[in-house]
Amino acid sequence: MDGQINWTALSVFIFFFALVTVLGFIASRWQRGNSDKGAHIEEWGLGGRNFGTWITWFLVGGDFYTAYTVIAVPALVYAVGAYGFFALPYTILVYPIVFLIMPKLWKVAHANGHVTAADAVYGRYGSRALEFAVALTGVVATMPYIALQLIGMEVVIKALGLTGELPLAAAFIILALYTYSAGLRAPALIAFVKDIMIYIVVLVAVVLVPAKLGGYGAVFANAHDAFAVKGGATGLTLKPAQFLPFATLAIGSALAAFMYPHTLTGIFAARSADTIRKNAVFLPAYTVLLGLIALLGFMAYAAGIKVTNNNDVVPALFNALFPSWFTGFAFSAIAIGALVPAAVMSIGAANLFTRNFWKPYVAPDLTHAGEEKVAKVISLIVKAGALVFILFLPTKFALDLQLLGGVWIVQTFPSVVFGLFNISNRFRAPALLAGWAAGMIAGSWLAFSDGIKPVHTFVIGGDKYTIYTGLAALAFNIIVAVVVQLLMGKRGQEAAALRQAS
Image (tube, rainbow, N blue to C red; front, side, top):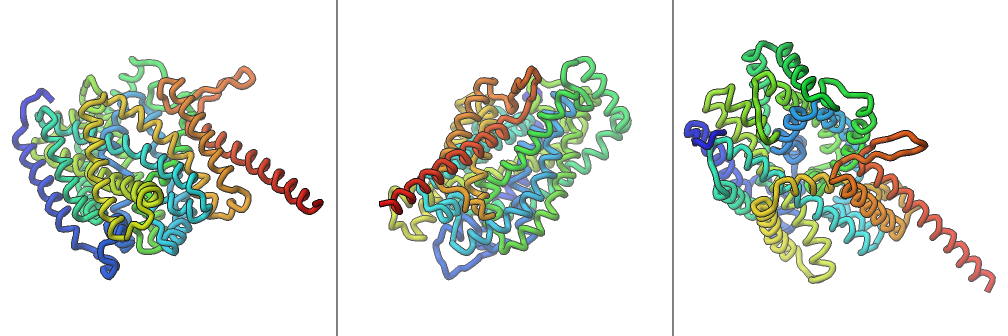
């Protein structure tokens, strides 16, 4: 972290990065689906809907547990202690939701050729306005998420001693090229390597780091002493005032997680609904990994790590305690962990733009081959936009927008999910659109009024209740949708009565 290049670590890093680059280009001929379709957005953007249980497991895990997760979760635990562990119950709660909802959504998408969630919404409600709202939310919420993957990669590149923007730009140019060539197959194939590497790094770290620092007793004792000095809301256990925000963050994040285009892209690419159910059962293995990753934040205190930016905690810990060759391996795992989700995110955003903006409003007669060409070009533009975002705007801005992204994307939950369970018999498109608008406005207003924080404190009857802003906005969203639907129903009954009277 002193600016001097660690040549051994850099050599190992370059080797594994070159390996996944080769795999990325090879992937264009791997797991071909319905080849008789020829050029088709389903082939490029969904891998031909041909991914079985294991491929889907690695792909969904790869784009759900990102490089920034490996960097940000320990950084949050390092900064605030137990409160940073909200990611664990959130990733436990999300899989029953996946098991219940996603097979139904897959069946609808597969039967009707839907490529995006907005496709499914339009197919169910026939409303271009509601389709546009869902698609726009998906694209806007995804862009800062891609930028955060660059931040994760930027952190480890800096830890190797490299400076300037050229290494990061080169990495993303390579990503852009093999994603353009192979589509979703590239991150799906690379996810195998990425996840195996991350598991090796974390398992080695949680065994060897405590052994070097005097055991887990010493790790927790040092973290406890450090948090005691900090005071405030930090500590090894939650304070009573943190119970409600912790719980609502977990619940709201679980509802939002699989509304993102990149996670839904992994779902739509599965071979069958049964594949998704099996993944909902097996994917919690990643939660165990996440819990181990989070512990790195406590280990940093025992190792005496001090950083000016919390995101540097994990790289600093590895630089301090491991030989250069393993540090290079770990950093390459984290960087590759940025490539997989960034690729899927750009593909998801490109699918949305092509299917739900370009085709309906610009080129209604666009062929399947034309859709694929447009999606490929848009995927390049999305990556370039994310790179420009990181190079020319403050990192904090990307973090702030990502927090807003969670508040925004959860507002699409009623439109995407209600129709799958015949709740749409009680909701029509105008009501859901009104609810979406209300949730977006209320959530954004609350977030900005709080300085872009994920929670908001409500004062009711003199008591204070702090809850996740996205969940509060979602509740308002549903209430507005119910009220508008009731008013619409009443007006419809009055109109019918007038027609009968006349």
